[in-house]
Length: 206
Image: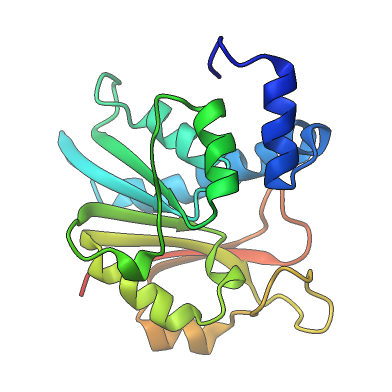
């Protein structure tokens, strides 16, 4: 985070974003990083040969924790066979201000994805966001319009609709995966998600 921001200012940004600092550093940040790490193998399997240089958009980036992992492991200066210049995107300006303070080097767009029509990225990632949006299928279609090559998705799988957490508006099952044409489907027990299994997959662009 920026050296010029003292802890009082950081605390103010956390409060503005509605995120408790201790909860973020002990629980939310490790969870976001782990969830993005679990999506990486699905991404890596689509780029098996050396070397690739791509652009990547991470949608629903929130505090930028998962996006920051991508900027580290896929950095153009790294050994990675997939090297990416990375952009974060979220619709919430309050969370974006916190993310920019925590990760000042990160390109961060505050926008509704349906308002973006003049820019595309080779890769679009969306980790644990579809379950939060009112209409996940149109949202996923728009992600596909923003991608040149692949859209990579990670979401809770077969979450019990009667007991799922309040912030999750939807539960996803096999019919959803079939309907959207999910490829390379991987269903597993997440390291930081005890409420259900997680599914990762990719879909092609539109």
